Length: 146
Image (spheres, rainbow, N blue to C red):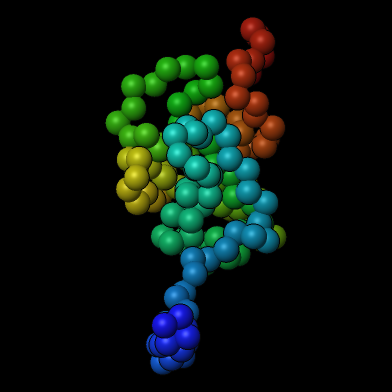
C-alpha cells in the first residue's frame, strides 16, 4: 500500500505545472532604509510601509538612495490616532538630496493594506528634523534644544 501511495504522489506532483512567477514589489535592497518611531503592533512595520510605498511608487523606490520613514506622532507623546499606521516617508533619489525627495503619507489600519499618497502641508517638526538631519532619536530633546 505504501508503494502505491508514493508512486501516486510522485505521479501527481510530476503532472503539476509550476505556477508562473509573480512580479515581486520593487526592492529597496540597494537603498538605505531608516524607520523611526513606528508602532510595533505587528511584525516588521518598516518592511510593510516600504513595500506599500514600492507598490504605489515603484520607480521612486527602485531609484532611491535613501528611504526615511517616521511616525507622525511626536516622540514621547500619546496620539489619539485615526490610523494605527500614520507616517511620513522621504524617498531621496540616487544622486539627489533631501530637496529632491518625494514626500509621502503612508497610513492605514492593522491587518489591511496601507494607503500611500503625496504629503500635503507642512511636516511635523520632529519628522522634518529627522528627514533633514537623519539623526533624530525618538527621545525628548533637552530643554532649549531644537
